[in-house]
Length: 168
Image (cartoon, rainbow, N blue to C red; front, side, top):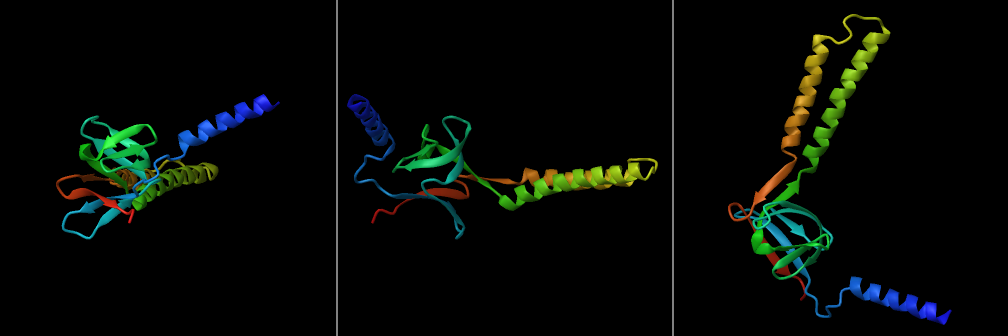
């Protein structure tokens, strides 16, 4: 029984030391995405969700920030991205995403309700031209909003990344 306890205690200690930070003088950094010539900025700390495009990988990397060092970001514990290799940062526009989703649902809902109403009242034709125009217009506006729901911030032209040391 003690052998099992010792083995379990050893496994628990190994697990705790691999997950817990072991750096005793760890720096506390803040990643700042700042628009040049404007007070507009976005702050990223540990645990923040971020989407970036790396010059090296030529791909979009999305996830949660788990470590910020003086030259790198660790995203989702597995992806190490150098700050100088970040080409774009993508920001989600909440209201555009919400509006596009609501417009899709409203367009489909209007179509379904109108067709259902006309079918239970034995009206002909079941799908009218006005219903199609209205539904297509609502869904079309939703598609346009969907195109603008993510903002791309190009590093170097209008935007810059700054690393702030908050350990003082």
